[in-house]
Each structure stands twice: as structure tokens, then as C-alpha cells.
Amino acid sequence: LSCQVGTEVATAAVLDLGATILSRREWAVEATRGPEPFLAALVACLRDQLQAPALKGRRLAGLGLSLHGAVDAERGVLRVSEHLGWYDVPFRDELQRALGIPVFAEGEARAIALAEQRWGAASEARDFVLIELDAGFGMVQVLDGRLCRGSHGLAGELGFTVWDTADRSAE
Image (cartoon, rainbow, N blue to C red):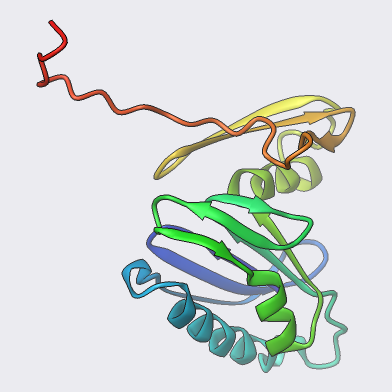
């Protein structure tokens, strides 16, 4: 079971171990309502996906969850998502409690890097850098085949500064 939570759309899908999509559903992310209503909608959608005919007779490994923002992967917490306006959302614990399955949460760029390492352009690389350009941008470093997380789990995270070019007060 897989779920990607972006800034505008969330996608839940049932995949086999070869990453073939067996069932898929998308819905709008209404970030301004807050994370609690979104989590309730997410649980309902995932429960629906768990009933998909594609899962009949198959064993479920768990839920892989990709979140837009800085994620504490060890605790499964969305630490901050400026685009969503959400802070310290305990996705893993809430979803494990509601669904009764293992949940593995990761930041969006890191999830992309893991997929590229497993099935994509980086499948034969031991060391690489992935730069993601979307609503924001992210950067991930993979060294010796492992994600570089750093002491606080945010190594390689990039930010940006918006400069108001119309503001001439500094001249």
C-alpha cells in the first residue's frame, strides 16, 4: 500500500512488490482545513484501498507514506510543511493505530530517491544526488547506497529565500 501526500493532491495506491499499480485513487488536499480532517479522509481512503479486489489473496507488507515537507522518518512525524502549513503531525502513529498495519513515512524527495535507487535511473549507482523541483525543491544525497540523513534526519535539505525585487529600501 502506498500513499503520496502532495501540496494539492494525495494519491493512494495498491502496488505489488514489482511496483505495478493494482488500484489507485486521488483526492484533493485541503490544507487550510488542517491535518486532522485530512488524516480522517486519508484513513477512509486507505481502508477503501485495503478492500480492493487486487489485494484479495495477497499479503500486505505495510504502508509506504511520502509526505511533502521535512519528515522525521524514525518517528513517522511530518515535522514541518510550509506549503501545507502543518507542523508536528504524527502520521505514522495515527495511521498504524487506525489501520493496524506497519507504516513507513518518508519525505517526498527521499521517497523519490529510494524509488530511483530501486527501480530507476540510480539503480546501479552507489552514490548520487537527487534534486526535486516541485512546489518547492528538495535535495537528497545517497552515499555508499544509503540515504544520508545526518544527526537530525535533515541532511541535504535545501531551503530558499524570496527576495522582493520591488523593495528598494536597502539602496
